[in-house]
Picture 1 (tube, one colour):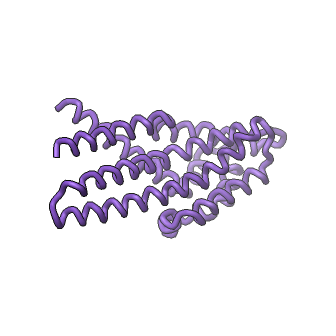
Picture 2 (picture 1 turned 135 degrees about the vertical axis):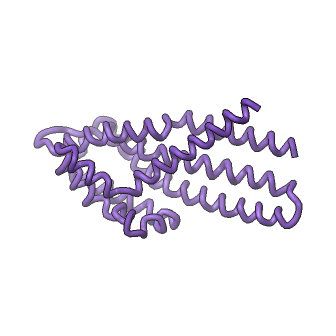
Picture 3 (picture 1 turned 135 degrees about the horizontal axis):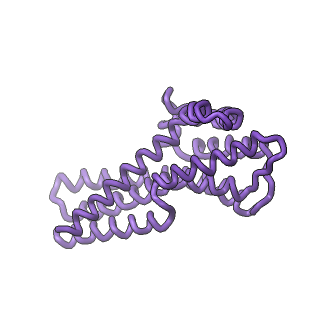
Amino acid sequence: MDYINAAGKWVMETSFSALQSLNSNSEQAKQRLKAEGKQVLVNYKKANADVGADKIKNVILSILQPIQTLEVTGMTATIGLYLVSHVVPWPLDWLTKAGTIASAYFTYQVWEAKSAILEEFFYFEKRGVEVIDQDKFLTHADNMADRVLARSSLFRLITSSEKTKTFRDIKEIVLEMIEQSNNDTALAAAVNKVSFISTLFQVAKGVEQRVEKSITNGEHK
């Protein structure tokens, strides 16, 4: 059992280190999304302002951060449950095996959503500083949301509620954000309509805090 506990701790620490190397933490990514996202919106509001593909790429990268947190967390849980299922007695082994399957399915669903978003990231990365007009920007935002929903049944379920379904109308919401970009109060109200993305950041931040606390407690034992 000590061997399994040590292995589980190693998996957690290694996974968290990998997560942190991918991006900054969720709170920093959220603040970066606000700053860079607003800059993009304001530029589209201006008549003759240009928005480069590199600016949009950075906005997408910030949105990816909480999804990467959930992906790594799901992978860690899957491996941990798999290890535990080999040492616990019956009938707990069946419960942990069921948990392993559920965790693996969750991770796969998150991975599918991440892949859909990465398609947009690499699209804009490839184009460097090429100017992206507003119509193309709105179309890609809409297409990204559609691909996420098409690939991930988990995200379809999450965005089916009254509170989060605005993600399915992301093109209209982003257009509203552009129109309100010079009014901080109105812009905040428009951003709040996409509560799904805000929820992702909240969940990811909570996960990071719990993992950091767990690792810290383990180091002090």
